[in-house]
Image 1 (cartoon, rainbow, N blue to C red):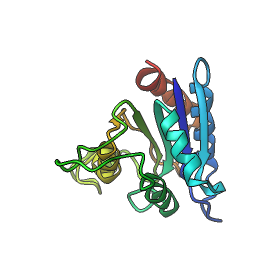
Image 2: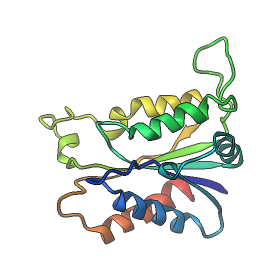
Image 3: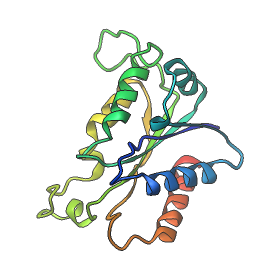
Image 4: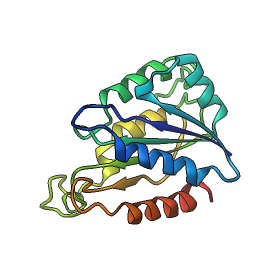
Length: 182
């Protein structure tokens, strides 16, 4: 398979992206055997046409991102706006949302979040018993619009407290083996 791995973290002095970079590198490591890998680190800059070519080449796109204000960082959204409007992702259709050109492609969202899982899984939690895919519905609908098929989302919760990186790496490896490399 051809796998494109994208790191959508936006650097700030108070959020330097070390965990997202680590997870991004682990994704590459776990996917590398027997697969071709291409990468983008959005914060390092990109050329729109080169990014379009990477998508055309790929079978699976894996997005690594922190959760910023209940969505992706602004620079990651800008990347999507610039790259996806370049014309390869969809064509006009008589039925809204049915012009996606990437019907043979799959994508996976991998996230890091400050909130605990409790806030999602409990009716009195902050997210009112919604899961992360409910919160990221706009992201998923964007990719559905382009014709892509969603793979199960991976998320690391509570990144600022009691993070067990070895345990999270193992969860990520199992997730990739089960949902991406199957």
